[in-house]
View 1: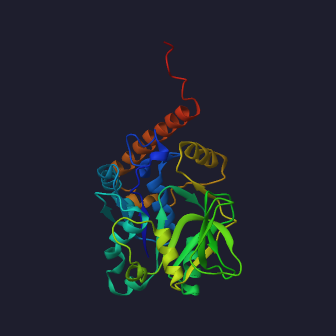
View 2: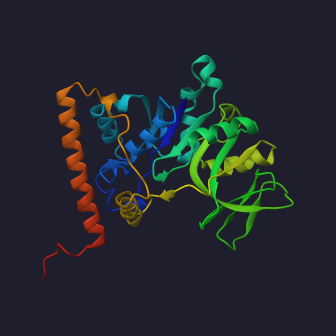
View 3: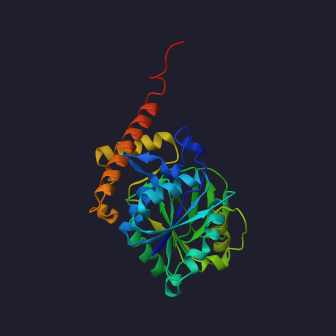
Length: 296
């Protein structure tokens, strides 16, 4: 199975953590957001991934080389100008349309800056059972931007906040407002049906497709842990969730980096030590931003 990780954003909401690195290489409990996402995808059978990059793109490429692509086939889709979520996906279409039978399989689209325990295997099965063009992981929780779904769980519109005006793609007897989680399952046919070009957001594209009768459906994940990692305080909270056992980041397939290679083991150890120290420094700076300043 294939996947795409959306990692090209500037990470402006994460400053100062992204002043000297891309958001994909910000760490939580000693692991980069990119590594955490790779491991989540790999645990559900994904072995081929394309990652879009822009901000500090070379740093991501060097990181992947140093980690031997985490034992996966990884391709980079470098964006000289940001293409947003829809444009970035469309630029990567070749990756999903190559290779005979695999081009007919659904694939995952995953934001790099979210943590979750959403069952991706169950989500893919649901997508196939529904015969959907796109399946969106959603939850009933507070958000600044809601997606609206009808009584059959099909996308019919969106709304800003609790009391904002509704933008409807089609009529529906009932409308349920749900928060999108940044995880999608898509059918490869979507590339032929997205008419937008250049830089564009994928949500308006979904609304356009829904208006034309395409099946854009909701996968409810209300019971799952989920956290957006778009702000520094969210990184701190996620690290605390790991410390408390609320969310677990493990190294279940450490052997894929060739444990027989002593130099590889030493490099992993050194990397873990440095990332743990960096994470601790980041957390201290965020929690106590004035502690290290000398009085004038």
